[in-house]
Length: 401
Image 1 (spheres, helix red, strand yellow):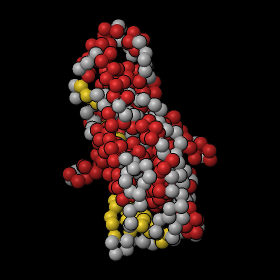
Image 2: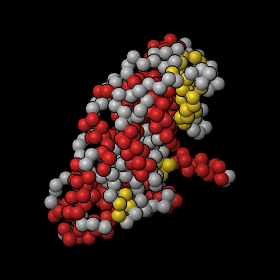
Image 3: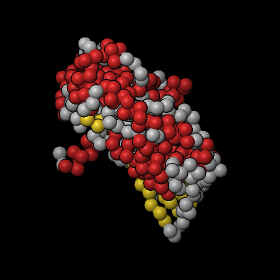
Image 4: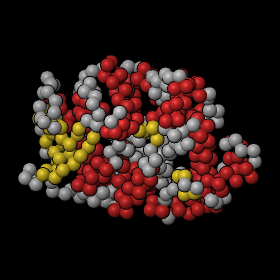
């Protein structure tokens, strides 16, 4: 296989995308069909898994769910409907980086930089056109999937337009939208939904915004840089889809990890094939179980005041002494020191909150508060406490061998 195709195949199966669109699809399917379990069949996912802050999926998993949804409901304008329901805070740390940007130029730069972690299946790029006095956000396919490309194009353009309006205010309007799609019979619905002129039959699909910088009221450069650090750290060693799917099932089962044969059946493959896929990703099933145990132990340690003896019991250690040895091996410090250090860091605010490092393995940071749960039409409505809560949210976990 040519080197370029090998890289493309790895990119297709790299589990580094937040399931933002899948959440919207499953919510729509629960309300109006088709049945969510049919859409997720063979993925190892259940509808409830999509709410996990740790979950990352591959482009190929994304595409398969979209393809099944469109087989049952092929209407293209459903992409508009779903995009209008998007909540910028569903983008997690990417959302906070955007909300804290100085102006809409920097906001869009941040989104383009972390587009996969924001959950966009199409490729985003941005350019500034001085002659037209526009910022142009271009949307293009990552891979050759012509059957789902029109839907993903419409959703992506509409979603970027929607979250831009959530930051800049509901009165903001794009200058123009170009779609490299045939003009549909319901073209007027696109202009109503998008709030600007829409041209079909273009050579490329793009969202055109006014060039003069529009300031963002909640701008805070230190928060932007902190989110950039956390996003780069959480994506330093992205996993691949089989390891990520197995880890999600282990998380779902908590203390009693199911036999690998049972997981393989849920993924619609044989146990032998699953072992081979994990091996190709540099993983083993036992290693994934141990990694989940480590993640859960550290989370209980830094996110609660649970006594050490109870944490040891909940995570399968024979005694608090065994727990202390394990934590010291992972972090270079004992449990009490780790808990105290994270508590002190969280008191210093978002800039001090991060990951404790030890033994070369990322450790979750403390969750000082639950994430903010509601979005606002204007960035000035996102308060400083809400920004602090999002900043304290730990980066997504990675599956390690």
